[in-house]
Length: 472
Image (tube, rainbow, N blue to C red; front, side, top):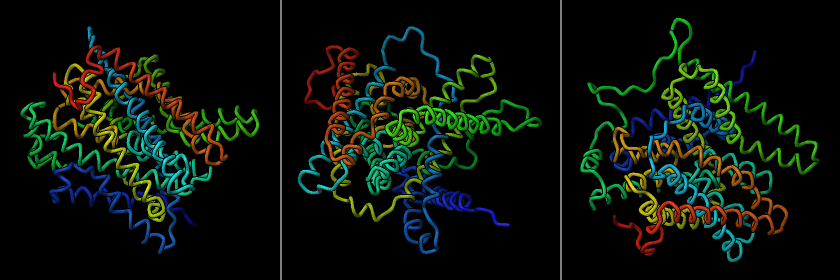
């Protein structure tokens, strides 16, 4: 009897990469100094393995892409099942709305910048470049490798050859901006006196630098038991709920697909595109499941930290697997636009995030700026890693405000995701109408962000516009 070992082989290879990367983090000063996530290191280690060694052994990378696709949705579900942080009574600082505005501004700005640069390259150097290429800037930088892969893979069916690999490469470069430039910004803040004095000491914390809690140190609690072990392991219950929610989201999309089929070819095409953004529907389903759990008053059986561990594991495997899935042949094909868009985009983020954050926030401005910079170039885990240097025990409201703002940002961002295929459709049809429609929508998001900035920051909103960091 034959059994399929492909998913086990992929999981085993990624696991070996993560273990090796964890060991290297404890030994290599460069990885420690710039706090390079182990998953990122593992992805780069596995890149030549999947591009050269595995094909020589007759092994395809298609299953690796499937793994990344599902892990992305599972990570969103695990975070969506967490409880909502309680609002601080009497908080009139509008910090949650401000946090959402800062994040949304980066989505819009990166989309406009990436598409503008793509159009310029198409008109001058590469007329055959897909018009959707520039959207890999916000997908890879502000969203992450999973989203860049899932949406880029969908574009391949619309004529964007190598769309998934181009997106993953952009995400990898975004991680490098987050790690290298993020640490530089932290050091700059320490020198300028924007940060507490303990921030400099945190850069020398052995546990944080090596990524391993030293022998003899107290080990932080990562999750808590909510069930009796004799009945069911608590992690089994949490994992089962995540898997059940994923099945429910699958049924939801099946129902939507069935309903859209009555609209003919247009409806069928839309349904196909929706499967590429399955993570959106997974997150929505998770939020609905959480509402039901709260209504049934059984929310005490769920532990937020356990859900965070499940999400963290999914993200680590997803990031390592996504980078390993990059096909280098397409990196060589798109090296020029990748270099141009990623560099200009990275510089733009480095300049605009401090500019906006120094004006829109009233407290913990530099800490909030570092957090926003991390999530605008890497992922949530990258932003939290940078924030931990400044706020080791997350005692400030920065991390909790971000979690609260995530719901608002997600709701506002759904229309953006639903029309994200328009530039790819423009390339496929040879008409510029869909491209300009998306540019108009992205511009609308940027206008909204600027109006929100003016309302929240008041007179400070556009004070000294040439000053990157506005002093108190």
